[in-house]
Image (cartoon, rainbow, N blue to C red; front, side):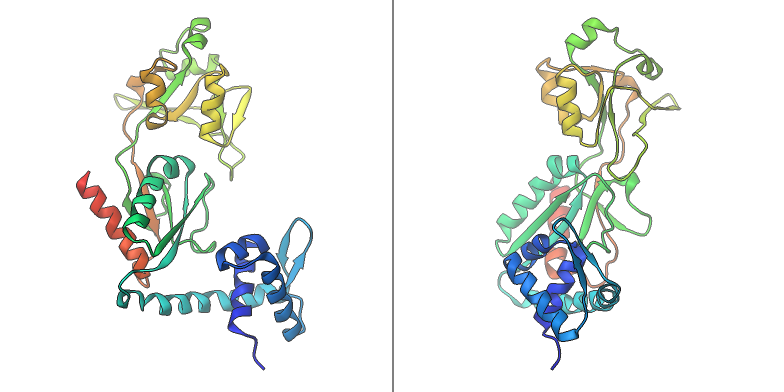
Length: 299
């Protein structure tokens, strides 16, 4: 007797997420049901597919081989089901999107909320993370990043306007330390350092004026990998921070933060939704793309 498609689907979800709990969320079943299904598949094949510990899940050699063979087939099966969506009165399905944290908070969440209200049968899962995820390898429908961080082989569509960054600290901080007049003056200040989750090096603050471009590797006693944490630190007086202007507009308008070096900060490419191919897009994802483009036209 052949293994059931249900057990193979469960194994694929476990292998993709390397987590029983995450697989259970994707499949809409309990973690114990996931464990039972996987154990049933392993018994049927007389092979261990997954190494389990209390803290981690990893694939055995047999598990890696099976997943590499199954993953494309499971995508084809899902596409076959999605091809039926246009025949339904109400589109259904789940879109999985990885997004930079500020992109998710400032733009994507509004779009997703309005989209599922217009299409009640659709669901959107947003995984907010500043590391660059492998959209294809990690099973996402799309990603959202700043335009310059989108790979050349990806197809991209804007989800918001061009962005502007801001350098700011509390008025109390600048009362104790002269405000910088040139980007290099930042080297004499305490700054809140931002470090991308997937990189060891810190983010270099970028400036431009009259054709002159400068990158500054700032110094500071506080380093974070989340821009909201950076804002918390700056508001507590830790030093100067580098932010999306939309993130701190209200705080600047109410005087809680003071902006500096504004003439050194120019508009940059905004956030884009990107995906690997125009072929085999699900009906739900095509609706999502059309929804975004319509919003862009209206705004």
